[in-house]
Image 1 (tube, helix red, strand yellow):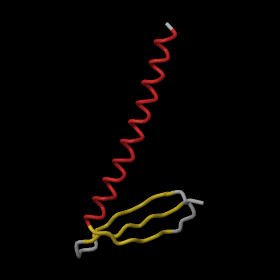
Image 2 (tube, rainbow, N blue to C red):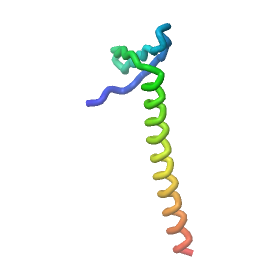
Image 3 (cartoon, helix red, strand yellow):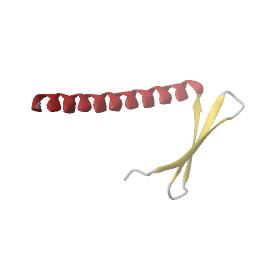
Image 4 (cartoon, one colour):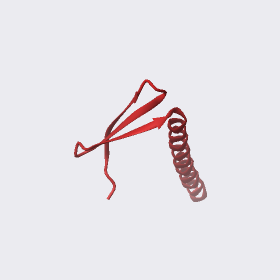
Length: 72
């Protein structure tokens, strides 16, 4: 079962990398080191997912609007 993200922090480590701390609801924290390029890839992946979900929601709303017009 997937854990639920409670909070996270991203801090520079002074050597050009970043430390990510991901904490779950139980208070367990995982620590990762990531480069700036890796953080950029994470951001891009999140944006793509959010846009895909938004596009899907907009498609659903358009379908609902079309059905409403058909009923008139």
